[in-house]
Structures are given as structure tokens and as C-alpha cells.
Image 1 (cartoon, rainbow, N blue to C red):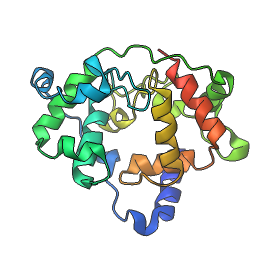
Image 2: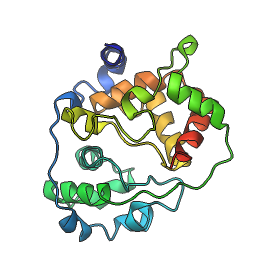
Image 3: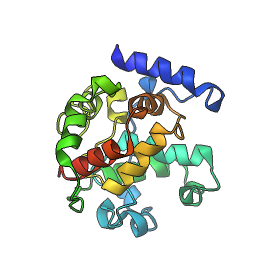
Length: 219
């Protein structure tokens, strides 16, 4: 019920910015061939690191991420075709099967620990576990799992749960940038993005940094 309320509020706030977001509540699971994907990731690893473990903190780690989430993210880059995004050129010549195979490949890799951050992990843990009702901030664990390793039913529940990403061990600088984009309404093309827009709306910069540093330390 809480997620549904957040989604309704966020959709009302999105207005003309995104009249018809992709509804991931009805999305299916994907089938991909990891071996075929391995032949397509040569360019990917230049930024996202060997085996999908990004060495540059501004880039996301892809290893161990849910295949559905990876696929939908790649498909989103292709659908938006934003000339300002460096990902547009990387996906424009890939077909849907390629995207599914790449997603399957990185999902099957093992995520290594992110570089240690010296941030305020106590605050980050509190925001993740309990949120902050006084500021209208929801806890993160409801969708992303108690250990930030994905929704507990991502593997065997309805497909929609696999579209909530694994956050544990993700690069902190990437998480900071991504959460700020959600908070500032710059990502609103799926129902999950609209939920995140509502969740992040009241996060200040310090809370975002603390949350990102804590999440990065969870591997």
C-alpha cells in the first residue's frame, strides 16, 4: 500500500515530464544467454571493469546485478536515445537479444567489494533500515532487501521484484549521483523510477552521501 501511494503521488508530480512511464509492475522475467553476452561486453568493461566490477567510482558495478534490472536499464538507454548520454552510442547497434544476453552475462559475475569510503555509516544504516518518518523518508530495505542484496523474492517471486536493484557493494559516487537524479526528478520513465522519485524527494545531500557510503561497504 505504501509503495502504491508513493507511485500515485510521484505520477501526479511528474505531469507532462513523463505522461506514460513504463509499468514494471507488469514486466516479465527475461531470458538471456550469458555465453553469448560475453562476446558483446568488450567495450563495456572499459568503463565497468573486468567482470563488471567498475574501478572508477563514478561508474556502476554491473557484476551480480539482477538481469532484469540490467536489461531494463540498457533498454531504457536505447529507447531514450539521449545524445547527451555516453551510453547511447554503446547500445544503438545492439538488438534486444544482445541486451538480454549482456544482462545475463553481468548478472552471473561475482561482485567484488567497492572501495572503502570514510563516510558516516551510522546515518546511512539508519536511513536504509528505518528511513526517517519525520522527514517523510521511507526505509530502503522494503524493496532492496535487509542486506541491500535485492528484494527477498527477486529470484522466485513475481517478476516485478527482480526490477529492484541490488545495492550492496555498489560504488558510492555512482549511488550519490543516481539518488540525486531521482530526488531532482531527472529520472521518471518507469514506475520504479517514479517510486524512487517519491522516496528520494526529501533526502538532503548529507543523507544521500551517508546512505551511499554505507551501501558501498556492504560487500
